Length: 398
Image (cartoon, rainbow, N blue to C red; front, top):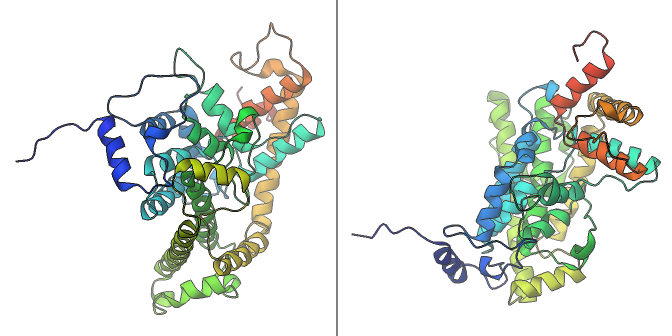
């Protein structure tokens, strides 16, 4: 009979050495944390990072932050939290197939959107406009995510933030997609991403394109007819039983989205495996060095054909979904709310909570703007809407 011994951290690290590829980031080889801590008895450093992220306040708030559709549009649509979970799932599938460190992947994936303000990209755009108009540094949600896990989350007595490993911090700060611009902060400028972080980058792109189509069709703001001119969509369409289209249309939609993800995933894995074979990385250090020198040329990527088909599909979404008049109404309303809140707080900051604005302290103009921007960015959609009602509706209870 097999002994029921408890696996230790050292056991997990030994398993990593046996089953992960040479280019994977091993827990044992981490560059460490900002503040030194003794290693855990049971969990590896990346398992520990993942758990700290899941238990933090900013992660819980993702439940009430917008992906595309603001929460008052209905409870079916994806939120930042459901999107984050989907990205983590897709990224782990990529990592498992390419023999990467799934715990590191999961930690980066779960943290990559912590810095998003309310109302999604509309909220981020509004905050960025306000900051730049005042000649202060603009708003970047990657930087905000980094600051959340290094400064604003206060769960430990000996340091601010979650004290995550360097590999997770770099993955958060340098996360790159169509909508994500890498942040620039001090010493991290000279740090390269791991392959695990690149897996999260591409998983994010795969998830939002496929799942925005799902939400868009469900909302009725985009139709199959709008998408049929795209080659990638046509490939997915051809894989689904045509009888479902009239017999069970919701099932038909789910099956197309499923096929869409499957086509992209298989292409991604084949192309990435070929690239890894070509480069012959022998260590995670080599990977970091390469990614630092070539930040635009990800080894984990789609083939040129699928990449082109995805770009065309993205253009269709931009035209038909993101610029649908009802989505534009939502985003413009969201921007007005952000601008209104910022203006009220700027004119009279004593309306801010005591924990945010210290009454006995003098702030510079930049500090003033950053303080208000960070406070608004920490809001959920629901809280921002309630706060706006309290401040602008004379009949609303304060």
